Image (cartoon, rainbow, N blue to C red):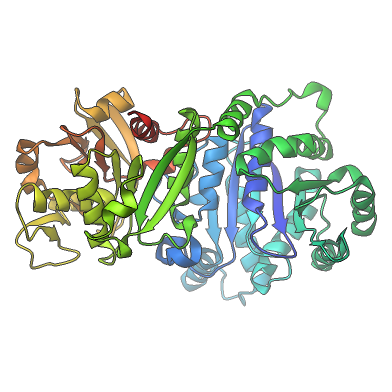
Length: 535
């Protein structure tokens, strides 16, 4: 059984420094040395999970294979490590308190007064150690959301203090801070870092490693100063400088010897530890950074003001573009503003169109307009989740001449409900009929474009939706040339549709973007981008 070690990544000075990227980069470097690694995110907000959070506020809701709605940082973890995450990899304050209150209501505490310490901190520690308890991993790397000093983060920092005491050298703290550059003084200032480390120390936690986010290279003298004032070895003070792509960060942190310092501090003999094999990763980054010719892709969505709402889709397109030796030129188009009058002006120069997922009626008309334009002009088009559903409705309206075709979500009285909550769906839902979440098996029709893309008959993809393609219209669709090429294994629910007469026009009910990684980009995105660059 593996002797699991625990690494915590905390942040100071300001939010959005990239704790998730540093945590994922460290995980990648350790994995490249042959260790089994998993990443975990602790979120201080009181929501039980991000499933009900507004995409404008929180970005995309990522879904794990076991159907958990999670923070978007889990997407970074999977893209970097290529290791599937689960419910245990994302814990919120809401879930911690919910678990403790449920225990109290059941009488598990035998009438004792329930307090932050020890009851909340014990629950946090239980959730942290749950991933390592089975002995599957050499390292569990836990990112603590928020900024040191935030009142919401205090129970998590206290839990780390206790674990550091309990686990000794099996536990290590990496603290990420910001070193601002004052243009007027022409100086990098370390005082915010000193105050951040002091705030951490006041909560009983001493950082073992400091990673300094910066726009300018940090000199040896400044590193020495930070080491002195922050009680950290100089070799453990390293920089993370701004880079054009997040995928360069693991290579930069390897140059900073982050993995070597971590292993040394945790008692490993570097002479007996394999060197990190980053060959495939480096090859990808070089493709990404050296591509000269562009592929112009438009994402049509209702949350485009915050690109993080489509984070996994954007990263999947980046992966696919790089592997096709192209530089991604991405255009985010608000579906609310798209109409018959302006669609040609907005889309005539794009090589491919992605119609994005979403919930609710707003922006649907713009998606219909984009799909009609793509279908009639033979432009490669990928519809994801609601993108497939709008693809179905547009086809029914404009090809099958069901002019009132719609979804029961939008208009329950519609005669032709192309998208509906199906009886077949109710039999396979895990969550009381509310949503189809997580991975489901799908069987592909041999001879279809989908089969050619995946190169196998049986696949598994992740879902997050309530409504399904209405099978009552399947025969009509296929007669008119819209093939239902992927069906759910446990029922006949349609998972993939494709227009046989079109260059590349595919809709998928699932979210392929959740499964695209750096080393294994998703075949649907690879094929879509390839079709977009072909003349």
